[in-house]
Length: 106
Image (cartoon, rainbow, N blue to C red; front, side):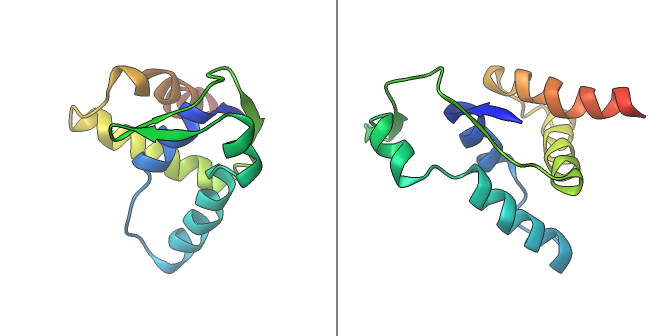
């Protein structure tokens, strides 16, 4: 799935911090796949200014491997944010891609 830097960061902040051993191992791999590489940091001039992460190319996308169970974990995380009225405007596109896409499959 192609994701921008912002989308990757939003997913990373949304992922659960706790779970069972299987879920945590999947989360570990997912976090590694979503994290920026050193090359991406350099290529996009990623920096922190006043506690905000900034980069030069907001349209930069990369293909991120997200397995079926990892997809379900992300969808569940966004579902919980929605249920607790914690979604932000920035979360809407990801909510639609993960939660609504999953619902369409059912």
